[in-house]
Image 1: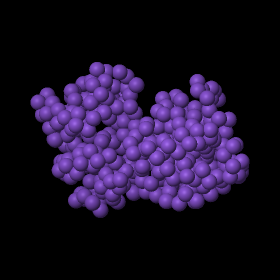
Image 2: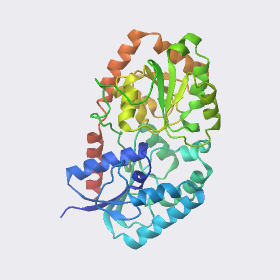
Image 3: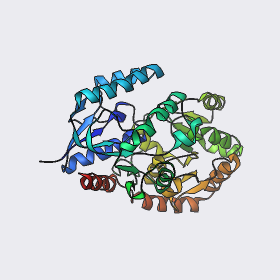
Length: 370
């Protein structure tokens, strides 16, 4: 009889972000390995793993309810209540998204903690999210037997701020779907893009430092801006009024695409001349990996976990210096030899990050606890 585990898959009910992708990729591979009986919690328990693009009635209800902070609070309380009433006891419960559900009963609990931005950078989050973490994270995290995190940087932060032994905090790097994120022969796309462009992806919100990128782009030489437009993709996020205003003011050179499907995202990476990711703070930084895998040179922030992902394959900038972001962009755009070297190193480095390797490490932890 295979051990029965429950995976919190609520992140799959929202449009796909980093945590949703992580939840899906690891869950899919665990299911394929067939060493455990996997069940998924969506507010109800199911044996079926929802594909992120798959529609469901509960997904529609959830997406409606999260438009309001009050409705979001109600939904969270309902999820805990439903888990207390409708879920049996499991041998192991995996929460991929920070806070174990206090209503779920399990012999062992594993929680993935991706970063500490909710504590260290409250300015990067909406007020209601900070309140939710303050009221629930520290209260519930100590139910965990093991914490998984995506970088050595995040492990150090966890050990500094939580009373866990180092042996209880496991670093497992995220992976990449190499069948999807790769150099393409066919780069045809069903929307207009400039012939040459600088690309950045991420929610339009303070943490991603798009304001710094927009200001850096604005002080590039005029001929550089003429030759290389700036293309942005991602959800509108929150506190983005200034960012959207600057995009509108420079719409002849700056293009905002909104949220892209995986297929369009891969093609946009492939078509980009340069990918820039000047984020202030990341627990891992999947977009850097995705861009490298698509043979695109990368300029990214030298802060937090990003050097662990980029290694020697990217050019680093100080996210707090608009001038430095601008200089690093220019240094890569002007040097074709450097670009080729970065592409070669990036492709090689990206291949070392696989979801298969990541899933195998998760499975080892789950089996050791069971």
